[in-house]
Length: 305
Picture 1 (tube, rainbow, N blue to C red):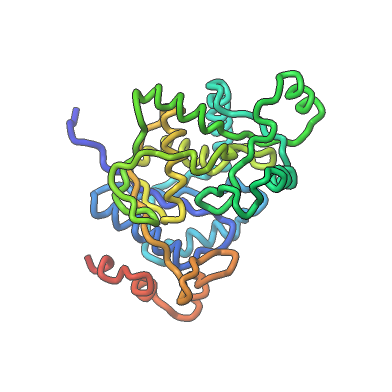
Picture 2: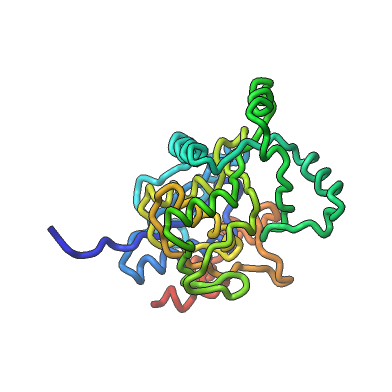
């Protein structure tokens, strides 16, 4: 039996809810190059849990654009839409641990509670993505009232009780929980960092229309694929605090993280699918080459390495 360590495993995990733009090209190229430099494996995952927005034509375009860029990946490609049973099992475990609770509050109720708090929506604390922190409606419902609402079929989402979850995770871990950041967060955060999941408050981990969340799905799938190194944009940096918490609670392995800067337009705005920014397909149709794309995102030197 060989004593050689297993090669590191990297991944690129786009959602087929629009065409890829330059930011996606940068992230995929950075991840693939990191895998090559480390003598590791590079995997592709299709994150298609939002069945209402994901389209087959977008998924097909992902394969075409990445192949055109000169990238290759192992088969078969994991699709999150085939893993709902695994996500359900993870949610069931969190419920059994007593760190998840059903939330019946509508968006209107949440905003109303904040406005009636005396603090006001403008001064209410917000998460790193700019959303108001959940004010705790329906959090401590008596069992009888909880049963009544469920019996009546009132729509609800599952939220993670951050305080309980962090306390339990630290008990399991035997102390504070950290993650290793080899890149840098938006404010230069790097190295061994203590998690602060309270930044997001009692975040949603499953909905009625999408019976999971990005948080659960990404943690479960990274473990299932044996991902050891996660390279992704800085817009996802703060979510790592939630993900490390879930990894401990769900007994999942800890990967190493590297968050990279985002590709922005000339005004400094981050690129997005909804704005149809600098789509790879459009750039291809204009006659640009894969090397042109690498140059546009600052990776020309890496291509020659």
